[in-house]
Image (cartoon, rainbow over all chains, first blue to last red; front, side):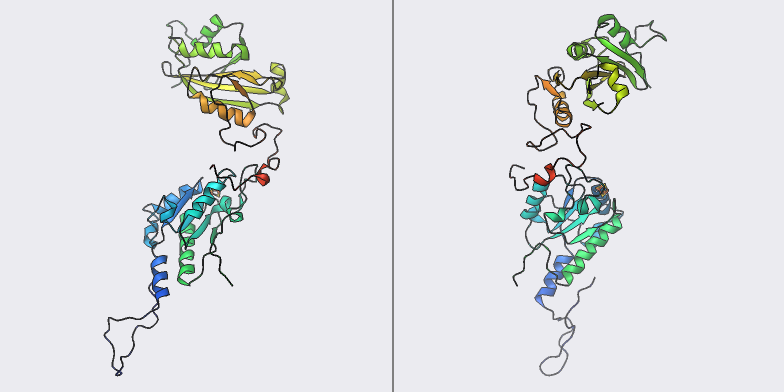
Amino acid sequence: MGLDFGGARSLSADGGPVDENIITTTIDKVVNWGRKNSLWPMPFGTACCAIEMMATLASKFDLSRFGSEAIRFSPRQSDLLIVSGRISIKMMPVLKRIYDQMPDPKWVISMGACASCGGVFDTYTLIQGVDQFIPVDVYIPGCPPRPEDLIDAVMQVQQKIAGGEVPKGVEVAV
Amino acid sequence: MNNEGGTSSPDNGAESPFVLQKLQENYADALLAHEEARDGVVVVVGKDDAYALLEYLKTDAALGYTYLVDVTAVDNSRLESELVKFGYARFMVVYQLYSYQGHCRVRVRVPVHERDLRVRSVTSLWRGANWLERETYDMFGIDFEGHPDLRRLLMPDDFDGHPLRKDYPLRGRGERERFNFERQNV
Ligand code: SF4
């Protein structure tokens, strides 16, 4: 989880070592390092999966170990949307608006079978996968997934950020 | 725990529960059926008498069923054994009441025919019935007369059909596919 610096030591013009406290890196790496270790999640918990999400945030599993404990209930302050639970057709416009209100760059975790594909609820009112409407970066299988699975998903998002990967929601001009 | 005797008259002993005695005294004609269920007394009453009987249960000082726990309905259309009992009334509207005096429960069931889905609203007795009746309207299409604001509660306003009816298909009738996700009044 450390900072992967470009070159830890370099030589000064006259060939001698520079002061040991100077490190060199690229601005992207520093920014991504900061981003990945301070994700602010926006919880969108609509069903039983949200209970596991709460457990993940609480002391036993403690998501703050990964820098993601600053839960924001305003989408304008967050950059990681965790969709945990069933989304009905009536709720989908709400979710979409919340996603739209989050500032870029933003990532989305689709937690559990229901959010990812409707789960067992192929019924008259349920969205069969939120990725039909908003771009999802990491899916978590399970019903419900264990807190470890959510932690794993957050770490996968972190890896994506550290690797400089562009979030799914960003349209890149080619 | 379960004192079915209600706020007891001293001599009701092992006979039928107090509330049932009172109802049989005052509403003998209205009662279509009654039974003692595990969690209290169940009475079936025609819909023309339902409001008066519920009001009596609520306001009678000795009974005091002041708490309306739930209003819901049952669609018996696939259950022949239930249908034959009350003249092939498709729906049963169910009121769950609780008395804080006797710590006991009464379930009032009202048969409703499909050809006339009107039932008098009890919002004038319990303001809390407002959303319960809206939900029952939403899910079963029961038309609560005198309700101040009988709109759908759970489904979108422009939804067709009543999903908890037994003839409603599980995957709907295309509402999911037709839904306008761009709507702004969310
Ligand atoms: S995936 Fe399972 S636990 Fe999660 S919201 Fe759906 S039913 Fe509940």
